[in-house]
Every structure is written in C-alpha cells, then in structure tokens.
Image (cartoon, rainbow, N blue to C red; front, side):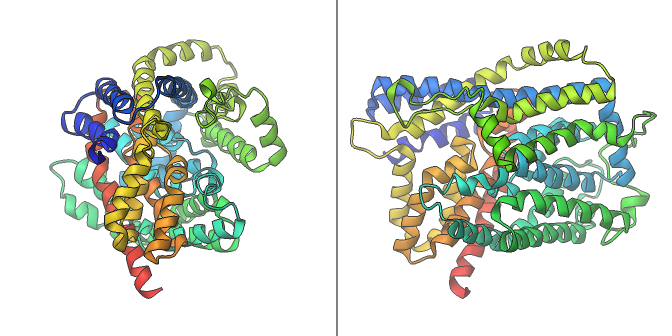
Length: 528
C-alpha cells in the first residue's frame, strides 16, 4: 500500500526524471494511474474524483494567469528595449555572472518571494537571467534552486500564518517557529549562495575554463552574502515579525551585496579585470533609456504587491471584489479552489506591464498583439499544468474514501513515522519536501503535514517548534523540484518538454539542503 500511496511521487520521478518524458505526456500518465488507484484501491467515490478534476482545472487558472503576467512582462520589456538597459545596468555593477546570479536569482528573487510567493519569483528572474547571458536551462535551474530559502516565509509569512493554522494561530507560537527557522538557516541557508555558484560554474560553465578555480574564487564572498542574509533574517524574526523576514532580509542583503561589490570586498581581482562569463563578449548598450525607467515595471509590481499584502483595508477590498473562487465543489466542503482575481500576482503583473508601457514608450498599442502571442504560446503549458494538478488534487483529496484509509499523504507520513520517529528531526524536512514536490506549495505542504509533524515531535520528545521549522524549510526546498513550478518556469523561457532534464538538475540541491537542515536540527536536539 505504501508504494501505491507514493505513486504520486514515484511516477513523476521515473517518467520525467528517468525516462525524460515531456510533462504533458509523463504527468498525463501519472494522473491517470493515480486516478485509477484512487478509485479502485483507495475507493474514492466517482463524485469525489470528478470534484477533484474540476478543482484541478480551476486551480490551474490562477497559476496560468500569473504565468501570463510574467510572460507579458518579459515580452513587453524586450519590445521597449528595457531588458537591454537592465542588462547594461547589471554589467555596470559587475559583468561577472557569478555575482549577477546572486543579485538576481537569490536576492531579487527573494524579494519577489517575500511580497508575492505563488511560484512568481522564478518566473520573473529566469527571463532576466537569460537577458544577462545565462543559458535558458541554466536560468530555469538556478532560478528554481534560488527560490528556496526565502520561501520558508513566503508572501508576508503565509506559510506560517496559513500553513500552521491547523496547529496553532497564536502569534507567539508562530513567531517562535519563525525564529527557529532562521536559527536553522544560519547553519544551512547560509550556504545557498555558495550552492548556486557551484552549480553555475560546474553545470553551466565553459568546458575550457578552470571550473574549480572559478568556484573557489567566489567562496568567501558567497559565504559572506549567505551569512548577511541569514543574520538579517534572524534579526527580523527576533525583533520585528516573521511576516517581514522574506521582505526585509533580501532587501537589506541586496544593498550590502552591491556595496560589497563596489568596494571589492572579499572579491578577487579577476572578477573586475577578467569577469567570469559564459560568453566571450560583454554586452554593451547604446539604449538611452534611464535605468529607473527600465526598472519601472518591476518597481511598480513590487510596490503594488507590498501595498496589497500589508495594507489591511486594501487587501480586504481586493479579496472580496471580483472573487472567482469556487467553494464546496460538488458539495464537498473540503474541496475548494481560491482565485481572488484582483489580489492575484498575475493581475498586478499585468497592470505593471501597462504602466510600464506608458512610462517607457507612452503607448499601449503593443499590449493586445503581445497578449495574443503570449496566450497562444501557453497552450501546452496549460495542458501539462492541468494534468499535474489533477494528480495532485486526487492525491490530496484521497481522504474522502470508502475504505477507511487516511489520505495518501497522511498514510505515507504515518508509515514513515512508525519506523523513523527516533531520528525524526532528520526526516522532518524531507516530509516537507515531499509535500511541496507534489502540491507545489510550501503553505499546502505545511497544511497537510503540520499537525502530524507536531504529533510526532511530541511522541519523539523533540520540540514542536524545531520540527515544524524543519518542515517549513524542507517544504520551501521542495519548490526546486515541484513539477508544476518546473512546468511554469520552463514555459516562460521556451523549454517546454525539458522538464525531466530540469528535475534531474534540481533534485540533488534539494536533497542536500534537506539533509543539511536535518543534521543541524539533530545537533540542536543534542546541545540546545
């Protein structure tokens, strides 16, 4: 039975990761098999399965809407020439792609995560990285891996506020877990910039270059930036609130990173004299557009996201008006799908695109032709995303059955905990990863496994706060390998059909991060 319950994990890994099937085919097969297992083995009523399919299709719409906004942003910035100007601006800070990677994917992506979440960061940063000269495969892989450490706190603390709502809604409890996350990440998340530099140089570097030397040259600076980010996160969680960690930590770290580059702090001379690049030619720009004008759509979207997430009356208005959510699908109160259209990052991205056009070229004539092209390009993504979510929702809703079995995810958790509870703190982040791998959400993973993680922690004599912190960090790392995140981001940069190749590249860093968190957590249980 455990293998059947795990099929929603095993099938995508085998079909995409091993057999290298495109997501449209591999996830269609996975969804069909999980549907059959749900009906014949878990004995889910046909009405529940139908409700899960409706839920999946509805859940795909807001994700596709965000994808539409991200693609529009990319296409319009290319049309106005803003991408070329942004590229030149980054080269002015540093032409070294190792530094650009940390600035764009880890820090700027972290800021987008803090104000948006919902898989938006990688969809925004991957196209920017391609404009800087990264290969599409490198941009997608590195953007996905980078969107991990900040995702523990997500959009204004949503993974804690909502994800742990089944465990406790007390502010003191949630703040304590936020502090524990930042304490663990002080010894694990600090290494994320270093991991990204390692992947860039060894997976996507020039074959003729000395990759080990290229990597070692950036070790001091990478560790410094990782430590700066982790310390800022710890300070914010301790003295402000967990809700602002993923906003203030990357924002502060961006400023310190740029200053350190300008001062050449912990950086070797060759970063400036012979910058590391996968191309022999450093791009120069004759674009007369100001850097502020070029960045204006991104500035607008960050300000709108920040305002809509932190100003309560504005948030309430956006959530309550034009709400396209579908509650109690086919009469099941646990089967619902949210789509608060005005509050969606996709809507705000689209508005930012229109404002950007008015600022940059003082015309919106190109909006509709570009929108038509973008929608046409999303057809295969819509199919791949829909079948992926069908598998996810059947897996998640399998607790509604006639066989007296717990849901598939709960069955997996109970079987694993039965044999591994003595070393549970090492296992906890991997259960979080499992949840995110299937559902694609740090929040949903924590909603699914939060209570059982707390129960196991009590039985194993380990602090609940520590185990739940490991769950959240693991769930955040699961964003690297989540199939529908991979499908969404790969479609932005034209890599549809390469999902299996991307998954193979992101599995190792996800597992390493989870293991590091587990080991640090185990040490905490011994000495703290």
